[in-house]
Length: 123
Image (cartoon, rainbow, N blue to C red; front, side):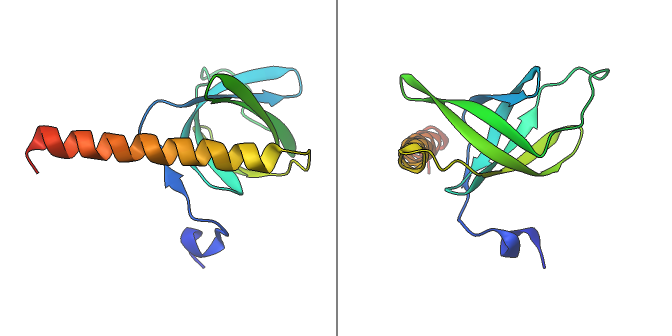
């Protein structure tokens, strides 16, 4: 089974700089969203080499959501020294709607980026 087959939702690749903050126990780790779906996200971690790279089973993410900050509880599904993959595990009212709204905004921004790239490359 490859990675694509394991995913339950289509992922949106995030090409623009979209920063998240990973809250794990007493640590706050900056990260960049690589891709995101309705059910989870993949992030690049910004960790100095000497920092412990282990994670708890559950973490919380803070992500920009328009002018607000979206806080989402998530389960760590895999990690490496550079990456963290999570499955959203937040059942609080309104969280899934805000995740979907963020995905819509990201898709719109990605569409604008693609149009701009095509216009500047002549095709």
